[in-house]
Length: 346
Length: 290
Image (cartoon, rainbow over all chains, first blue to last red; front, side):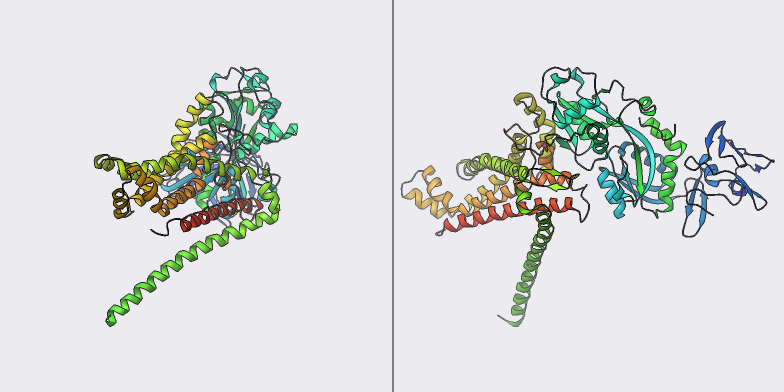
């Protein structure tokens, strides 16, 4: 009855053994005293952490504390995550391991999406600070490369900025953040916004001069990513496909978010698309009148948004899983917010 | 020869033979692998469609490379047309005309330039050349012209260094004989020295053209990478090599996309072979007497 990643605990006393103050078991509610206060109720899928209500498992609303075999059983993962401990599940040996930070050791290699890159680097720094014996390395290469390398086992974690296709579904998918794609133009362009259809037509080659969209006259230099980029895929899904348009072969191709940003920053007639985190030194256009802001992605009014993923093979190891859990935890999601991305949970 | 001498003679020659065979084996394996996967590209896309078609789309699983071939040839020829005359003139200057003091400064400088990694020139092109061309000549700045300039910066030092070496290695007796017969210095250079250095001069051109057509990253950074035919020097384009650099990470092993990229490599191989055979004929018809 152990389910992968949803671990029903065996002993409440695990918590006590780790030196956190003892857990009391009154009839209906269980509380543990520490710097963090967690309140759980039998048969209720929601708990309170420091007063804030949240799901014990937001992907499975039937995970609750239960009473079984004459004992009260608590979800270990939920408690340990909220106490800042690291819990991992070894399927082969059916073993649950709970440990403090600082005991993990090893290396993790990541590669893939340049949209995820700034976030992944910050995740890695924070995790390595908590676990000094761990080394994490990240190389870019684009979503296509990340997926390919994760599937081949060349890297432990592949980062992707688009949903997986059916042919790629042999990987385990862990969402780590949400992101928007901003349409950027040079600061001196004099336009404040466009419709999604106009952007699509520009990229399809049907609109070629800035004066046709309300700017001064000048040939539009359209910058795009190579095929395989998750950002390009997202852009295509929202700006081209709905209007049955195809990316023009005359677009200038670049290999990363950074290069697109650099190109648009230095080219007075340039237009490009980048992940929100890369939109500096350039002007971000309003799309359909909506500003490219975190709030607008959250409320669904900004048209182009996507999830960012870490991908692993199905038998990933303890260390990799611990890192991914860290990224999805409160602490990790705080980093998401700091870096200008959007948290997973609302 | 004594026995030990005979033995070491045999050993030396056999070792040399082994190393030569290894080099040949490596070359043959490379050619084999490129042929094998490149041929699949011909099969999957049709030979004539692959080479003469003009659509490349990973999504639609269709690949054809005519714009790439045109792009590669245009930037290489453009770079060579400028670099060869300038390079040879500079080599003649250094070898025959310049005073010793000038040569002692310029030659080492050129040797250093030969050693600079090409991606550095790409970076310079991207940061300095592209905005300059965009602001002063129009177009997006990422263009054939920018790529040609970057390639010239890369191959000119190579041409100068090699040509200069081969000019210097013409026996001085030839030069003296010509001068003794009353020819001027320039007449001697044009009619005696250069023809005799022909083999080395042609080698320098072949080597540099190989470097120019094979340059991938530096060209990728400045050429704009569009799948269109350039209609003017200021238009962007894409080459066989920059296409491989741009797309290699996306291609999955065993897929049509990867085979198409190998197809690009195969066409490149053909072009290099043709260039080399041409040089073979030039050398042959040239200096029998040297």
